[in-house]
Image (cartoon, one colour):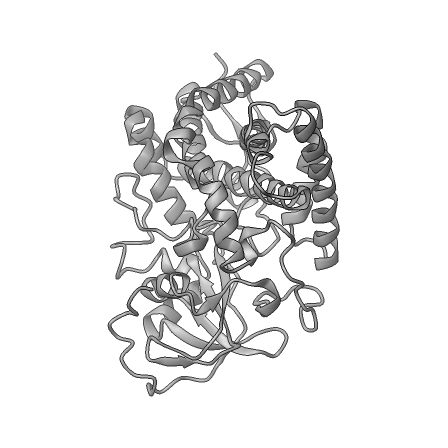
Length: 414
């Protein structure tokens, strides 16, 4: 367990009145900026009392050191059924989150989490993910060729940002190409908050049913993929289906959003796009900085299992702490000039992949995909630009992932 921040020496610091809910409205005309209130809250008090939509009196963490400390502390649980929802979702006033489905590593604690993580970590090593680089290059080239044949004027989400990670995660886990549409439909619905919680759970159940069928097929006839590898472990079919569903969903939506929103950011910061075109070796740093700057998985929740003193406050057992990753990644105490996009910044240490035992399992695969996809796109289409005004690019309306619904782009025809 990490030490708490140095200013967390007393649990007796005076506290302002609790916040009435989580700030979530992004500033007008600033599509990449977090809600403006978060910066003021972070400067005033990095751990602040907050009232949740269901009436629960919990906390909001906005400072980098506080968010990092909570995610590294075993006294805070990730179990869904212990959480209070910080977003004003339909029905959130009375909704109770059920326990995580079998195989969902995000919503469970040790020792169950430890068992699954140990089995999977060896499948997602840096070396193994880097071996996939050539295949990522082939998939990106195929989609860039298709864009070129179609001619100027495409929705980059549909033409590039969504299919590239979808095909990669499907290939990694051995999802037949013919089943990709069925999988993508359920995976996107399970991660969207446009509908009700019941809609999400129904989509997740459908996704698990598909993967359950896939597990049966892999046991009968293993192929060269991660899911087939796992059939040799002591995991049951139900556990394999749950883990497969979790990995499929997690490997698609987040990377798809990063490719779309990251391209949007680069096109509105042309000097940064030009720097990456001129120096493809900048890709590693560029990916980390884009992850920090955009913080697409912007908010998390943990719940205290016991009383914890942190940042001058006493968090009681049972109280939920909302973690503002987007505020933490813009903390000037950790990243100088945090509101400036700078691809040459050393942005390592950002919290966009999480921290502690729940740090993103597939982060190396996501990095490989982005390191290849961003430079390939910018190099293939040096005149790539938005096809509509910045303010007309439609943002995602759900509250759990920051992104865009569509990204219309164009370029000069050869």
